[in-house]
Image (cartoon, rainbow, N blue to C red):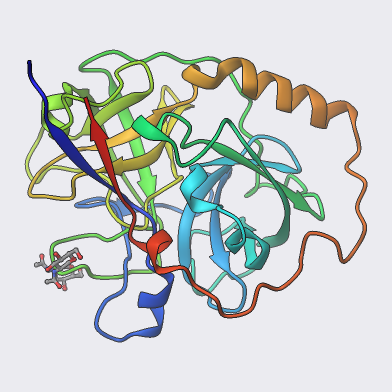
Amino acid sequence: MLKFTLVMMIFVYLICETHSNQMGWGRIFHGSNAPFGRYPFVVSLQEKGIKASSCGGTLLSSKLIITAAHCIVHPYWEGMIAVAGTVNAENWGKGHQTANIVKVIQSGPFPVEDNVNDLAMAVVAPDFVETDFIKFMPYHRISVNINDEVEIIGWGIINESNKTVSILQYAKAQVNDFRICSAEDAAHEVFVCVRGNIRPYTFPRYGDSGSPGLYKGKIFGVVSMGIPKGDNGALYAKLSYHHHWIERILKKYKYTQLKLRTNEGIRHSGPIWIVAWFFCVFSIIE
Ligand SMILES: *[C@@H]1O[C@H](CO)[C@@H](O)[C@H](O)[C@H]1NC(C)=O
Ligand SMILES: *[C@@H]1O[C@H](CO)[C@@H](O)[C@H](O)[C@H]1NC(C)=O
């Protein structure tokens, strides 16, 4: 019987690293600067007051952001904000809007074995308002197949030097066999392995977590995890796996006003950082 262990590293941003000069975690490997307004539905999730991106997310409505569950774990999300309408994570510029995360809705228990539920929604307040540079992504159930060309986006590291840049990066990539992600054991119905097939290879890394993968302009998944070695691709958590959950949440928040009590849900957790969450290593055992 084959039995093997696959160690997966979740590409969560090391918030503590932003305080050290040694390393920052800045963007998609071998991507290009995203022009302002090209991805108006992409938001940067940040620790309040830090002005550096910890994760990406996608606006599905004025108050709902879909991202990776590991990006908005309790209690860190209470100290996080979402920034929309900018490609620059440090210098937001004219036209940006910010909102507090007031609630997190997980797609299921997380963390859990096989990491099947690395998808969550952040509910924000105040509502984001659509402008020329801020748009909500209409949700459609999307499925992708091997060799499909997709777009990858994120504020994660850009190269082996772990170099940080502040401008959102984007690149073309392909849906690949799980071998390309060294993740033959990953749950195929839950994840998609993504990497560009042309050198220099494009793929997501640290800091890209939660950012959308797009197929024909529609979101099919969010950057979840991978083995950050060599030219490995990375795994996106597929939205289609949680399609009914997404529809339920969208419906609920379309018709129900979130009862906001100004101070609730935005309690400061203080500078308590659980290191385990900054550099998560999970074992997937089959
Ligand atoms: C990483 O990117 C930075 C910024 O573009 C560049 O200065 C540096 O030489 C690159 N390092 C490597 C190892 O490619
Ligand atoms: C970049 O980060 C990875 C992961 O922590 C580490 O293994 C690698 O040595 C770092 N590279 C540099 C040049 O700092």
